[in-house]
Image (cartoon, rainbow, N blue to C red; front, side, top):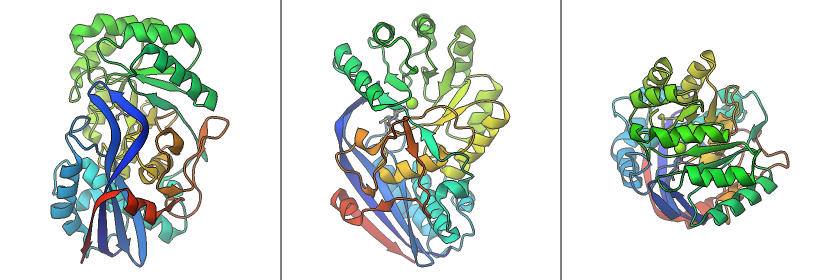
Length: 369
Ligand code: SMG
Ligand code: MG
């Protein structure tokens, strides 16, 4: 693939309803989309970063700048054999995983088109439908939360994740369990606690949760290992895993029993697949997380989640859970059995709607070799 042009789009899309985590609430979500041109083809990728560096240390501005000043110049005019060559090609820039992941994803799209297969097939797909869960943000009232859960379960979602934070945790989970004794339920704290909160976290053991996601610090592995010893419920790490090395450390130290793989958080689909394989070798199940992606990032995540060790329902929900209108066609729709279908046509398997992409763009830039 001889890369001769890259476009960047800074998009802003209004969510159907606000999304609140332990670090804040958002109504409009901003992302960076890239279009990479090579050999007469165009591929799309997404850096599902947030406007502000709260979930991760990256933000829309850092992605924009690092891609513009460093990563895009490193790719323009380059000849790459495979999308899997991207991590080494961009290794001179440290970190900035979401910035890198968007560009790499676009190259997976191009390579798959050239091979005449879907991105999923190119990755090593093992299933043609993926189990879909939904992540429900912190609500204004417990009644609102219960109503949301009820409607998502009625739609067919296979697993409910609720966000927790101090003041919205054990008592809230207790009310959810009282109303929904049998659903597959888990919680995600986005690092809202410390080891001093172990008694509250132990109280969650009473609610038959599928897992507790990232209760402790975003950069911690050791305290999670200590906490896991004190809990019956499995811990899952999200924010703590940015690299292949951190995944290996977390498993070696038994800091978790499950990993939430977000390709963008670990620097792209190549690294994500390596982490998937390491977990598979150690019988550690993984699932694909979400970062409120547009249909472009969602398509890549769906492809990723088709790999064999993605055995738990992830946070990849249907387009209509987020948007009035997605920027791809067809949008991702929930099947009656609570799955999303993995697209089969070459490349991403969905069409990027250029007019809609441009309509939601706050700025666009164009770089040529
Ligand atoms: O894409 O449905 C989605 C959101 C899933 O909860 C979700 N993501 O920590 O796992 C997580 C959060 C991070 C999102 S912060 C905006
Ligand atoms: Mg999480």
